[in-house]
Amino acid sequence: MLPRIILLTIAFVSGSLGAAPLGVIHAEEWAHPRSGETLVQMPALKFAVSAYLQNPGLKLLIHHPLEEEGLLWGEELRTWLIALGIVADDVQLIPSDVSGDRLEIHVGLGE
Image 1 (cartoon, rainbow, N blue to C red):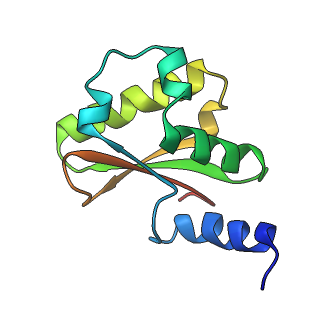
Image 2: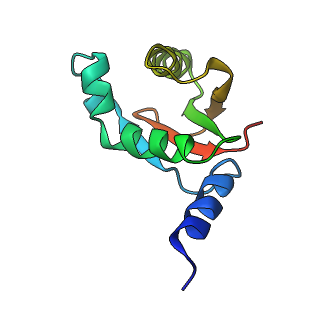
């Protein structure tokens, strides 16, 4: 069995190549009032940010729906992550054909 760190590294790097996301935020979850405190409690964000912090050189990749509403949602999440201390250059928005009711968070090399 591969050590856990190797498995996690493979998952993070492949995250930028279209593999399964580390986290998914659904519109229903995002519709609740937000604060820094509520965001850091979201399981998808906790896991993805933890993975990002443990792997210097990788980026948080937010795959958002293609339409304007998806872009605005992705930008709002990016703004929150920066406000919570993530380096702005390490948070990338990626238009994707994900379902309109979700954002996918990957950790990877970026584009």
